[in-house]
Image 1 (cartoon, one colour):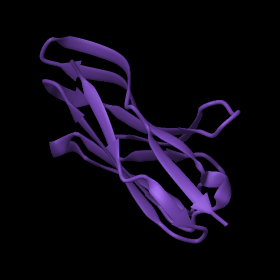
Image 2 (cartoon, one colour; image 1 turned 90 degrees about the vertical axis):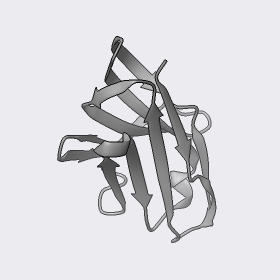
Image 3 (cartoon, one colour; image 1 turned 90 degrees about the horizontal axis):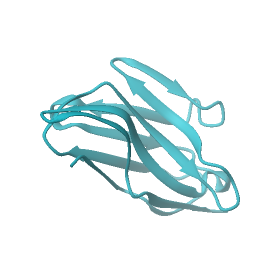
Image 4 (tube, helix red, strand yellow; image 1 turned 180 degrees about the horizontal axis):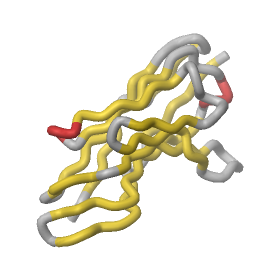
Length: 120
C-alpha cells in the first residue's frame, strides 16, 4: 500500500519560514507528479504547488515565496515556504495523482496533512 507522510508543519510568526517534507513509501517504482495542497477552515482544498519532472507550477498567491522540490531517489517532495503570511494558515496535504508500484498503478494518493499556523 502506498503511503505519503508529511512533516515539518508548525507555528511560525508572519515573515518566517517553514519547510514541509512528504515521503512516499510502498513498493514504489516511480511517481511522475507530486503536489502540495492546502485547506483552511471553511475553505475548499486548493493547489499550492506541483512538480512534474523538472517543471513546477505554483498558485499565484505563493509565487515568489514558496519553492517546491523533490528527491526522486528517496521519493520525497519538499515545500520551502518563506515570507509566510497569516493567510497561509491551513492544513497542508501532499498528493500524488498517479503512483507506479511493483503491484501496479495507484491513483490519487493523499497524505494525512500537516498543520501550518502563521501568527500575525
